[in-house]
Image (cartoon, rainbow, N blue to C red; front, top):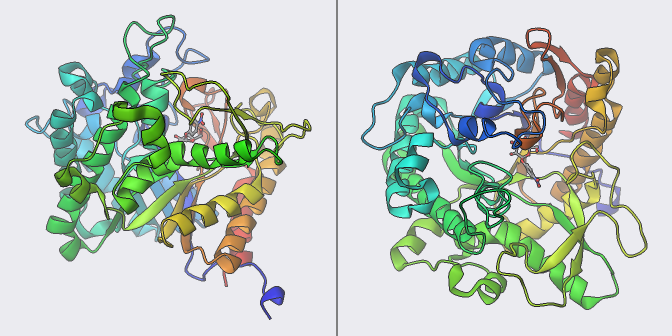
Length: 481
Ligand code: PNW
């Protein structure tokens, strides 16, 4: 009976790859594109590990047809990419002109995908805010101005794509924009209370305001899509949230067990509770007080119920140790420590090139279930999952192409997802591997590779599929029945 059922995925399961505009496109000033906050952030010495930028990246602005041919050769059913807002509306604002050439790039990309039988998934915003909006009024920090500008940008994109695009993602990982951009200052625009890192920022307040603006603008864009486009174009719209699984540092300490729940709430429920339940989690209100904004009735009406699907980015897991002392004003994780080893010194997973990433596939199954249970079985799409490899960039090209560690990651993670789907009643319908190809890994520059395809940055950005690119299709075909 149940016990003899093999873990599997639905027959029409949508699998493919994800990328983001600033990480792959290059051509920062071509055809009228203007700076985003990432263009300017990369120019500040010391912010990017190898001193690089997305100026060339994978050159996908010129090579999108190659990218689509690559997707097709791998057998991908879908491709998730993001829009460079400052390519489409260089100055960003609601009264600023649309750059038709920039917009056409994305229309051409979508047409090319359809011509090759690949489903496009569009992320409207993957961190590259137009610099002008930051300079004009402080970007996310000015909710009133920002929401109107974001909604106009979204409307321009919905209109340009019409029924060609059936899946829209409003935001990628607002936790990263808020915490890495406005608390730690490791990502653009680099705000933080730490004056050694930045002359501006208040980590105790800004990240919570940023998160609020993002939520309201997400809700406002969804409203526009539902009222003006959905009935004619027939698409679905949602937000993508990141979240790592958690295990107690000391499994016998109830306070560590409790801290695990708090960590999930501070990273995931911060955004998902307002969307599915209409309110921030009580644990956040308790710690943050009125530094955490409150929803007005109008705002709540916009945000609650605004997901057609839950977009989930997932890579790794942590051990969680509670703190006894009162939370610091700039604490953003629920007053706890994260660690890759537990009390017994056991590591949660093997090391990779990314300090925050140690693969632990069972955590993927558990987190899928946790989200599914808390939010009443939403339709879910995994919009990113993948791994870097320790020291990959130091190897020869031939060695890099034999990326068995990445193959095993996908095997284990896809299997964990299939278990959640088969045994835990989780309604997961898609998986986009991060990433189609090596690309600009934000503050880590090009030293960290996440691609199933090697990009030769010294050799004209030529692409060479790794073993994982050859094997991932078999992994899915063996699971989908
Ligand atoms: C995601 N962390 O970001 C992003 O959506 C991608 O653009 C990125 O390339 C990918 O994961 C791999 O890093 C994250 O420090 C960046 O915990 C950093 C963290 C998490 C996610």
